[in-house]
Length: 146
Image (tube, rainbow, N blue to C red; front, side):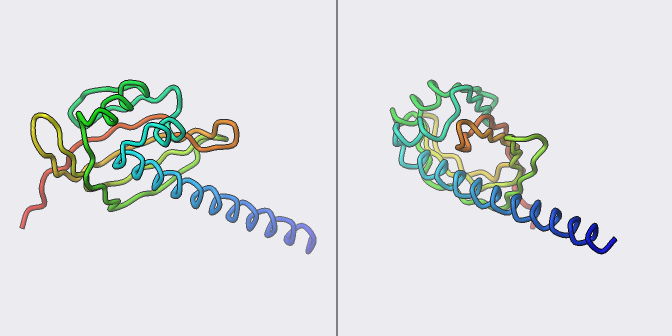
């Protein structure tokens, strides 16, 4: 009985440590994603985005990997600020991570400047041992009332 309790404790500890390592890796990957989006570095964007990226903007516009990289690298959209307000990860299946939270995003486009707090759900997928950004869906939150 004592051996069983020790084994269960070990497995639970191992699972918590493994999940902590995934969260650390995903947090770093998400920081790299936002830095790549702000710098509009084609090589970095290509490395972090999954080939199957589906990026649904808060405006309703949907981009693929190719179209989003084009938007960023040509300067049609320039992310000038990106501050994470809240970010959590859950793991619904092996190799899949859901990232949910809120971010303050500042961007410039041909139609003007945007400064919004977004609520979002994103999907990361482990591809060939690397976390890749697979999907994004966001909506603008109304300004806080005083």
